[in-house]
Length: 168
Image (tube, rainbow, N blue to C red; front, side):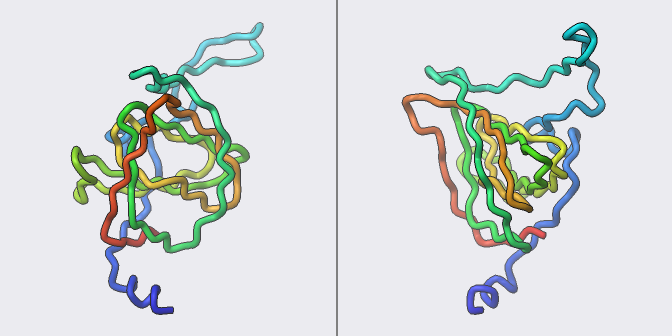
């Protein structure tokens, strides 16, 4: 109870719908909606190209994992953001799991003026550009996510602490 009372005065960040345009400063929305493609496989499929993951610098190579996420409780408390300076990171919900994306820009630390929170309905994924501050995976229901990121000899995860804020 004491923890909830302490956060009752915490600033709130409103969730916005995830769109290609609203998310553009932070990365790419991975979706075929609204994108042209080309016919492949004897006409049984359409190939829609997405921006390529940025994972090869400094001896990096692509890594594909599945993150098994547990549902976050609302309102979601945000105390830290992370970023990856050497490559992008992509999250793709498997099975339509909705999720929340919290992001910020900033050189040395997250810039509070650029903080944004998006609700992804589960029918698309996101790619965080290299150097974009973001919260770790925040699923709104239990579910699996395919994750494409850079693997290399160097650990590529920087964490910054924030004054607590609530997302709902």
